[in-house]
Image 1 (cartoon, rainbow, N blue to C red):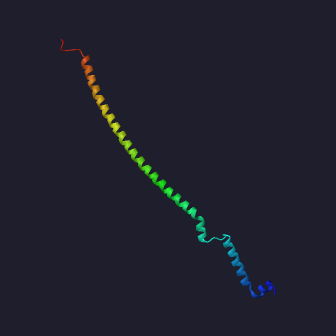
Image 2: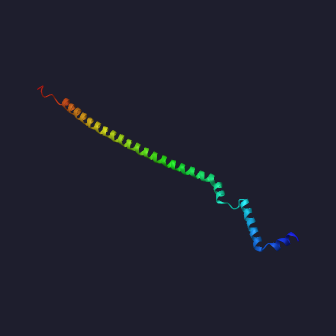
Image 3: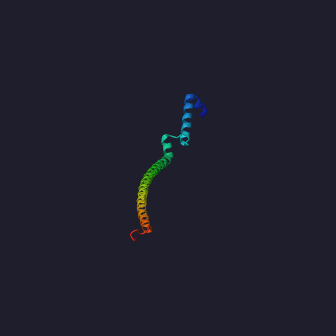
Length: 119
């Protein structure tokens, strides 16, 4: 009796197909052609860590942008207050110059008029 006669007499078709299927499955797992969840997670762990770093960086950039916007608003408020104070000062200077002009015009008028008391 040779090996082929022994296999055909002792094994059924169902047993042979099951053995071939399990062998093929074992071969696929051994060659990493079929991955388990654990194998997949080990393979992509560096990608997951990279993604987490990118998300943290994005959150940091958003926080920096918000802080910069807040600082910009504060600077704009200070700039407006300073400009308003400057315009108020110019208004006061204009009033003072108008009064000085009035005094100078009055003096000019008084000095250029003929002396009435000399008559």
